Length: 64
Image 1 (cartoon, rainbow, N blue to C red):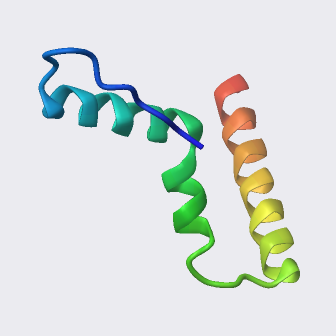
Image 2 (tube, rainbow, N blue to C red):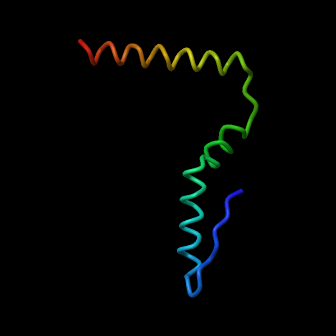
Image 3 (cartoon, rainbow, N blue to C red):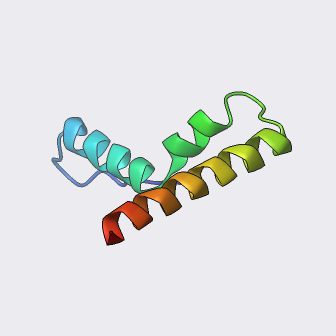
């Protein structure tokens, strides 16, 4: 759980900004977006293979 302690005489805007940064750094928002709907394991594996193929082609083009 992410906690932000508000310092004395600190504006709420600054505390909110620190909270948002901590959320982003922890990957909470990304995790939330990924879990909004169910994705089958086969689809997950297929996309991972597709990304790996793309990455491999990209690296081969960089070397040549």
